[in-house]
Length: 128
Image (tube, rainbow, N blue to C red; front, top):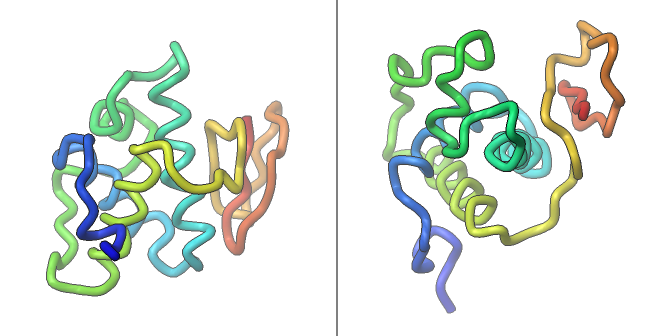
């Protein structure tokens, strides 16, 4: 049986890597559920007309995320492999979405006004 890391994918590796960087940077200290939720937000944005249609373009939109191009986490770690596996799974439309409809998230310590709360996972709150 192949693992999610070794399984064939129909998604572009560049898109997987952009998403994996965000997963690590934004939720690297979170459980798998929290990391998957961050990935699901990016995927949901690609399907919403207010955002770009590709994950890399979504995360590069001004004011949305950190400078993903300047962030280079080590690739030879379990954390990177797990982030790639989560990104691949989410981009292939596989797995459960713990935050259905969420398009935004932030640290739980700073509430977001004017949005409908979808859920909270560890240190993040998710909104639509």
